Length: 193
Image 1 (spheres, rainbow, N blue to C red):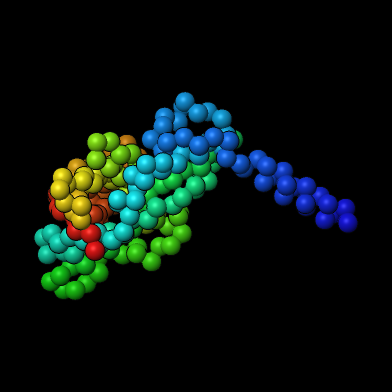
Image 2 (cartoon, one colour; image 1 turned 120 degrees about the vertical axis):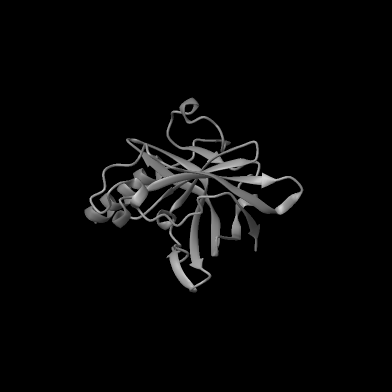
């Protein structure tokens, strides 16, 4: 009985610790809300526009991106925590000449398995960060997606750049440029499916 009571008290104390204390707009500055439990909520449904499957063809390759909105995801840092509405992405690349799949993580279903992280939205420009797998030394890049006026089913993929800040020496490759990267490195229009 003593063990059951101890387990119940631990569960109650954990549940009490992880509670929403305040709900604020998703784009609020984190340092303005230092207490635990703040929920950075997509109050204006900004993320909804970006959700779904988007496709493009460039240089004889077909790109398929799938973006998913995660609601009230618990994020921990140091001794703190907050909740966030976030957009995560995954993608697939097929070489149309050979019908060979060059990259595919569309099977990802868990939050942590998505390789594309939505960062911030400013003036219709959504910045993203991609981090590759361990065998590719967690190589990372940044890119943007932009709304196109008058085209609700099209967005512009642009501003591809290697993330040199997070790059560390990689024993499997000579340098960051030699690590295979399958994201488009040129601007392209993505069409919602």
